[in-house]
Length: 87
Ligand SMILES: [Zn+2]
Image 1 (cartoon, rainbow, N blue to C red):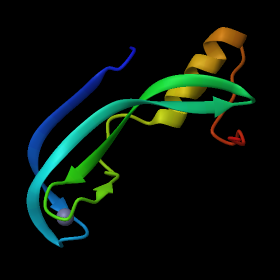
Image 2: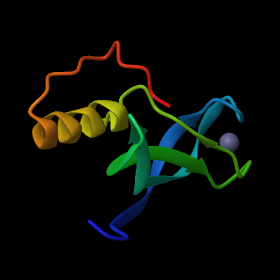
Image 3: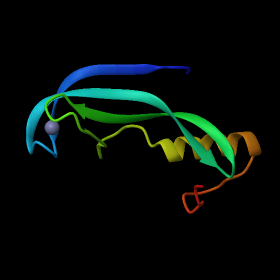
């Protein structure tokens, strides 16, 4: 999963421009720390080519924190839930 990055140009509604714009859909790995352990998981965001702002999307198919939690649980045989405090 090293440097796995997917960029494609899509038309999305930009909250800054307040209209549909040509937007870069970016999927890249990010580091989430759970109880002092680092996990690399994919996260997804949009980068507007008009205003040069990036923003999250609620229709993201990746939930980085949930994915990191899943990895943590698998390694430690635990069943931590979303109430876990992320540091
Ligand atoms: Zn924009």
